Image (tube, each protein chain N blue to C red):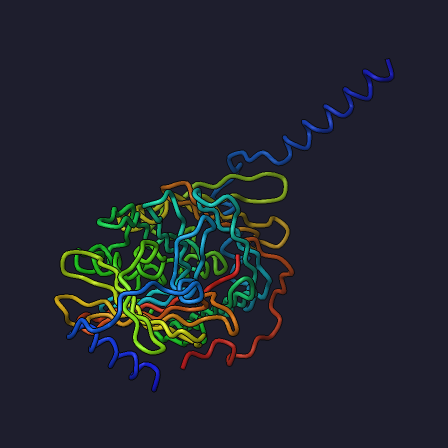
Length: 203
Length: 210
């Protein structure tokens, strides 16, 4: 909690003033940021989308350097969601009726893009202060992902999606103890009733 | 000569075993429906293990999971997945409890058509109502060991989720052997049930939703 408060202070100071030194992330910090990989990632998922609740399995499949396929199925069978995620856009291959709304799909695009590592596979603008580095990734004209990373290993890292400089989404990454491998991801929205919790499943 | 005879015998054996597995239309569908309904009424409880095979065409390997299955008349179902992820689904009439990632969620099955559909199909397969469902177009085939029931969804909402559901019913004890859910994209989920225990007592607590 203290760490998150500390990070928030640094984030605010970096956002309001440009006093932070431009640097790059250390290898250790880089490893703690999600990246797309050739191997499929599978997560057990809990989605709250407006008044609906879904559970299932979500697969992130890298199709090429710029496209990640995000497929969610229910545990017992049918597909719930199937999106092609790209850096600037997405395609809907399939979405069940409850998710087939522009506001929901747009939100899912950014959430799943962050969780899959699509948006953080490019080089960020890095600002460091003391033991915390802030990595900034431009998602769109209005949206920015700001990732804060401690120089020493921690149990979790936090990132925020800012829209017009206003914090709208909090993304927490929890790591497998004593490693940089992501174990679970928690995404909570401030402006829409949507929450996503992902827990890694070993394939 | 001996070589030819051996080859012919092998071929005859091979083709006769293939023929035995082939499904053909039922000789008397009305009689089967009556018998299936009667046999299903005899099931008060059913307990089994299951293996689930999920195929997604983009994935090289199928996802194999396993778990346990418990059913109790009327409308009580508990499905628990153990590997490679833990997931618990309990249906008690209209109430559904889901537990995954250490998180428990209680929902009303009527508020989520997907949950309702899947759980209803599973329960209806056991209690015999599946053949009376108005949501599907049904066709029934048989071979020497099983009945093969194919369900094609009639409703638009179901059509978009599933192209067909194929259920194999054992001729030996009229229990479900497999349920295969096929999607429009050709992805499928196949559940195979084993170690079945019929009418052994199951405590109501197993289906508790709170």
